[in-house]
Image 1: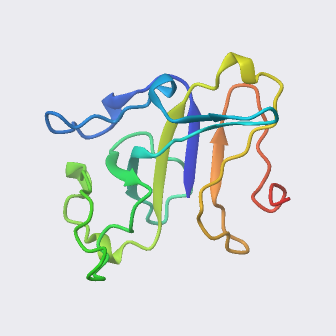
Image 2 (image 1 turned 90 degrees about the vertical axis):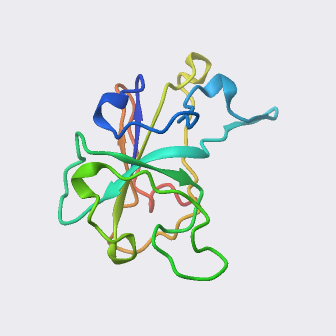
Length: 152
């Protein structure tokens, strides 16, 4: 599952990152691509991450961090093994990443004022499985269509 929330960064709910490691969420520093008909902003980088378990509600705390895009944590393929660091929260330090079947990803953005009234989509590159929720939006004044409604 994926949560993209608008608002200010609230790192008090996540594990502290080591010195020199930064989860940079300032859109002014992100890669932008603008054409006459659309604008894109790259959201790659460190996202909050944690195993999902049976929880259906978005966790309020105990977040770690994981780089997006990236291979699933705990993968043992020789080309992808140990290619990234999973910044583990102490509350789930004993969980084996290879055994995690679903996880929460969270990234906060502030939608630019100039985008007011525009249609917005999130492209994840993840497969959309029938009957599975891919994304959950939490925004102050916008609607979010399900992946099936947004597939056109």
